[in-house]
Amino acid sequence: MSLILNSKKNTLIIRVRGDFDLVSVHEFREKIDQSLEETMSQNLLLDLSEITFIDSSGIGVILGRYRKVKANHGQMVICGTQPAIEKIFKVSGIISLMPICSTEKEAWKLLEQNTFKGA
Amino acid sequence: MGKIVNNKIKLEFLSKGENVALARITIAAFVSQLEITLSDLEEIKVAVSEAVSNAIIHGYQNKPEEIVTMTGILKGNTLILEIVDQGIGIPDIQKAMEPAYSTDPERTGLGFVFMQSFMNEVKVESQVNCGTKVILTKQINPDLKNMAVS
Ligand SMILES: Nc1ncnc2c1ncn2[C@@H]1O[C@H](COP(=O)(O)OP(=O)(O)OP(=O)(O)O)[C@@H](O)[C@H]1O
Ligand SMILES: [Mg+2]
Image (tube, rainbow over all chains, first blue to last red; front, side, top):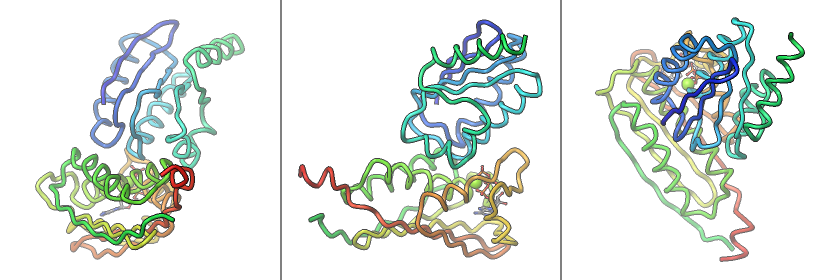
């Protein structure tokens, strides 16, 4: 797995590439928690369009970041899901917790809408 | 008609995280002898990943020098997978298989949920301090679209 991190508009953007399993969990958790602090971002946008695999280890660490963002009154949006991982999202219940959309553009729209609502 | 496949493989590997990917790729290649849908293939990979990850993380408590054994059997359209560790074992199997149950506060208890949703049958045999065997069975639906072409 490799991670690309960026931040803008109070949002940390993470692009994940490759297999998202037990091997990647540690790096994911450390890098994101550190970057959330450094950039002081409240929101998290997770782009999964280039992952090749995900299982419960990946889902667990995503849920952990979700709880963290929520505790800090931020929002989390996932984009770039593929048919292969949609079933995992359904079975895990993640889809009832946070918005999941196909493109990053849609994700930004959601983040901005909700920010205005909250303001 | 799809071809009839009867086959068996056995893989032994060290309990290292990197070997989880190896296990799922091996099984994916093994079942690809059947004309299998992409969706079935993905589901099998997740189930393998869950069982092997559990053997390493829970069974062997992340000790990397232990042995995990995985057997794959194809009997016609049925895939039978056995994932075995000689680790700490499970004191209460029924409890362990409950959704959202985990003995690790950092985990979510989704492994058995995925195995049960993606395979037709999940059987667990375990003895404390002896180890655990997970038997996963799946009926592979023939890939009708591909069969028409080939
Ligand atoms: N091979 C094993 N050896 C010992 N204990 C196991 C084994 N497999 C599962 N368990 C026990 O069963 C529990 C539930 O397993 P399950 O895979 O459903 O969840 P998890 O591994 O805790 O979390 P997740 O899979 O979501 O990361 C584990 O927390 C562990 O206590
Ligand atoms: Mg598990």
